[in-house]
Length: 151
Length: 228
Image (cartoon, rainbow over the protein chains, first blue to last red):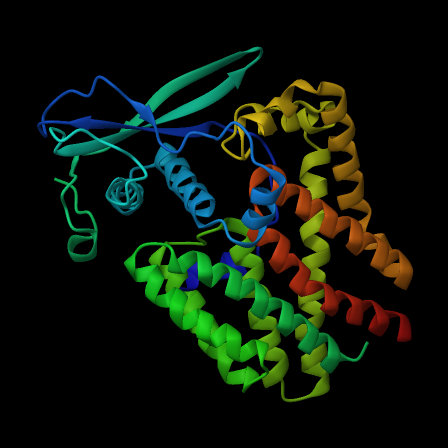
């Protein structure tokens, strides 16, 4: 606990000290657990525009965006080293987005996986590299019972 | 401003910030949802000034549970500042003497000042920030811009250069505002506007509310410094 608490009590305020690889998360639906994913879709793509009214409301209440920032933090940790906990955190949130109807899927799709890509600018070129592909999880898994345990 | 007034003003803003954060957790997954409900109740009690010492102790325990749950802060710097404000207010209530109360409040004022200064320092020593490239990258490749429209700010190179220097100079010079009461008020208005802009452009809404919570303490601290 002290390991977690000390950096909070003696924080380092290095906001945007350097702009490193930026994560992007894509998901893919699978009919079978061992299927090779072919079609990836971006998880929570940016809206074109946020109206002033919506912007003001999001100043007060914006749970989905803050969850997405947390997912990105988990993805950045996975750039450095594998963590089962971080991998599952992202999967749980994807599963919840599917269960809530935020993400649609076909009836045949039984599993979902995700990949993390790193966007890096080198000079004038921006490259995108896949750094991590998660173990597929059953879409029908009950979040409340198993917290989205992957296969 | 008296220390007691600053503590109470800070507690009211902290309670509002925690209500805001708790309402977001309530929309989340099961474990954090439960803690969100409990924290919401405690935050409302803090807002009404009911047993602040024990309520803040309860909020601190929940903050530790959430730190453990997410293996670190859920929302980066805003969670760090939330816990810091909470703990300093809690210790200010529990302090055995006025001296120790002033020490913990002084620590919070120092961290608030340092949050701006260090943030400005690490930027100005980076050539990418001095050229405006870093802020261009923030808009162009990071996941922070809230919409595709916000991302197009990356094309305004001259504006980003000016914004980079405005942010760096403001953050670096912030500690000097402690020398004068009105300068500090002006600096806090600018700082709050900066957090508001970050909330609008990058969706960092929690930062806006929680940094405000520390402002009454720095106003008290400045008065205490000047009075000797």
